[in-house]
Amino acid sequence: MAAGEPRSFEYTPTWVVTVVCFIIVLISLGAERGLHRLGKLFKHRKLHALYEALEKVKGELMLLGFISLLLTVFQGLISHVCIPRDSANIMLPCKLKTEASSGGSEHLGIAKHGRRLLAEDVSLETCARQGKLPLLSLEALHQLHIFIFVLAVVHVIFCVTTMLLGGAKIRLWKHWENSIRSETSQPHRAHAIHIHHHRIFKERAGRYWRKFAVVSWVVSFFKQFYGSVTKSDYIALRRGFIRAHCPSMPHFDFHTYMMRTLELDFKKIVGISWYLWVFVMVFLLMDLAGWHSYFWLSFLPLVLLLLVGAKLEHIITELAQEVAEKRNGEAEAAPVKPSDELFWFHSPNLFLYLIHFILFQNSFEIAFLFWVWTTYGFKSCIMEKLGFIIPRLTIGILVQVLCSYSTLPLYALVTQMGSLFKQTMFDEYIRELILKWARRTPSSAAGESHRLASQSTESIHASEQPTLDDAIATSVIELNHHNESQTPFS
Image 1 (tube, rainbow, N blue to C red):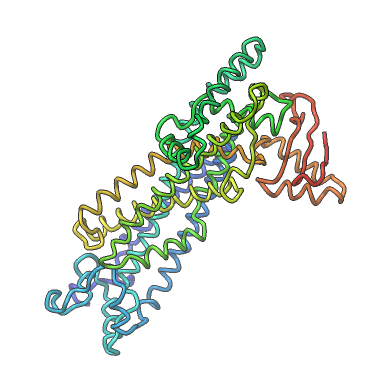
Image 2: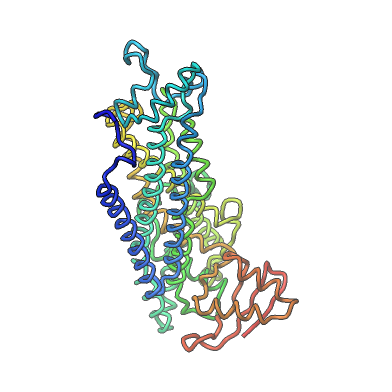
């Protein structure tokens, strides 16, 4: 064996193999035990939604491991697939250097920026004898492997950061909830305070000129940047929710319900769905030399985020206008009326998918920028000029901050104004009892019960809270599936 040639496994010292394997296994076991202990902590604190989100992260890591296995197993086969030179020289992310400037090699990037493997030389020679080029070099496969891993990690980090910051702001509303519940216990003060906040909420509707759609949307657009949710807004929306779904429980803890719903939604946001992987393929396909695709794509999450925030603010304004249009005698007692018709395509859940896509697209932008910088350097042609890099970084930070402190809290509050409430209306213990009740129900009601148990956003309307433990007063629950039939249980 020549002195300069790389050694195979047969000629590698056993102590080297052992040390490398020990380090890899130690890191893997440490990560696995860390996630396991984190899951036990969530269970101990009864944070069931966060525990399910952690399980979702584990599933994503397993998917990454499977992708890594496929790339490793099939890298030899892929690198030996040859394609014509004309096909290999179109749709390039960087302009191909001429033979004179590159020293006669069209694969200078491999030798300059990465490893040059012996197996890669063999695949190049094999394809060169046919007058072709390899479909994908081993070095390119290795870099693609790293990029997929970086993308998933950055996406999880961004989602966790957004939920922590957004959740922290929503927790600041807890003192509003506590003050409302304490005031409710003092009827002589509660009425005057309610009238005061109700009048402030009506003022959000503005005067006659605010009824014009263009004006209303412009005001809503700028409202998301400052004081997006006030105490009067929270009180009005809370009262409308309770009046619509649990009118017999004025002391209902709306804030806790909202936080449980947000934790449940986090499980969906932290994952990478199949349609997001499709977007990754589309984005990679559009990375062509001279197009500046990633610069223009960086504006997509910002535009979507601003539209979502403006729409959520506009929904609050519409609710205020509905209240203001009522006669003065009715307006003092009339709460806002939740309805799916306020939302795009009559679907409050659509906003969850939009936020999921926005966070993923922003993660993709930052992950791709970081990966290119660490792999090819700051002066790489893929990085483009400084004038393109700074706006991309600025937009990425702006999207992250705006989504955390404005859009996510708005989403958590305003999407409760749909016609339906979610399964987090009941705590874990009550949901388990509902499922047991469903299994004991006669066959005539079993179909409705199983649909109720399997769909988190099913049409469930509660007239009163159930008594299923010592902390809940004795009452009766009425379940209505799409307003077709009512099945009471106690």
